[in-house]
Amino acid sequence: MKKAGITAVLYLNYFVFAILLNSVGIVILKAQKNYGVNELQASILEAFKDLPIAIVSFLIASFLPRIGYKKAMLIGLGLVTFACIAMYYGNSFNYAKLLFATVGVSFALIKVSVYSLIGTVTNNQKEHNALMSSVEGVFMIGIALAYFLFPAFNNDTNPDSWLNVYWFLALLTLLSFGFLFFIKIEKPVEIPGANLADDFVQMIKLMAKSLVIVFVVSAFLFVMIEQGIMSWLPTFNDKVLHLSENNSIMMASILAISLAIGRILAGEITKKINWIWVLSFCIICAMLIVIFVLPKAVGLEVKTIHSFSEIPLIGFTFPLVGLFIAPIYPLLNSVILSALPKKLHSSMTGLIVVFSALGGTIGSRIIGWLFQNQGPQNAFYYTLIPMTLLLVSFFILKKITAKNEI
Image 1: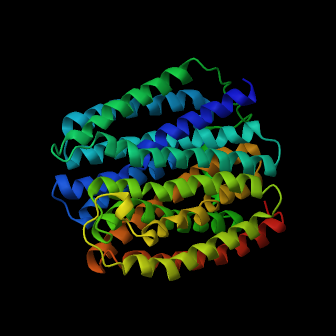
Image 2: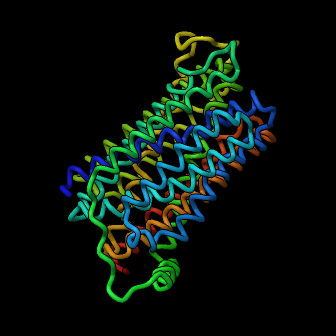
């Protein structure tokens, strides 16, 4: 299949799962209002989403080339179609857990497939950086759409009206299934003499490499920051900025839009500037926003706000942190994958997804605990700790890759 066709498949599948996967922040807010759970209880949805991603990725990453990436993606899309319909009829916190567990399992199949296919259509690190950033940018566009899609179905007079969005999402995944079904993607060539047990051992061996250790720590820290902010920004808008429920959700789209723009721009910038300087500049800017902008947003003395026109300008500024943290994840992934032979990309992608999922789960749980115990006005300040550690990890990673250790 031609490069353009495979690229289109990557974009489409990532876009669909972006809406599903990152609606967790919206459902966390709805769970508190509709299902009577507190902040810490609601944060468990992140674990139901991320832990299946981690477990399934670790178990099947090396096996996927044998069953084929197309078949894996079709299975993921099919499972989620049924899960969306079940959520509509179930309408409970337990069915929300089931939904995100299914989305997690399916996304593991999708992400490992997408990341592995990127390596088949690129020829060097710059091409890999650009396509990885673009794919992740499309992912962020899907996330941004979710923040408008859910309010579009929400009616204040009917607390269950928002569930209608799951019929739309079921239709979207079904359409994606149909498109992918008729696209031909060649099954990856197997490694001669390899078997599933050997592949699993190879993944374990990768974890012993210092380059991989530093990378997985970096990915863990980044996703802890990103998911912690993204999952709890609608609740922050509701409880600190006192926005209406729909506006709290839609305002969170600024973060997703910023992430999308940042990742798309990063794909172009890294063609001319070394990744270490791009990432260092970005994380420092993000830290400055937390230090200087967040206190002003928290310090606003406002009454309940019902429209965007009533929101003070500073309320729009903190979500712009997404513009600067955006390039970090795709560029880190591209750095590690470009340093490895293509035959190890599937195994490495499994590790990427595992530690990203763990970072997302732990990050969201920590922020949820901080929201409940330190107050929603203070929770995001603690992101400065992983941001500082992440900055240090960039230079360690650069030093190791410069030696061509792997």
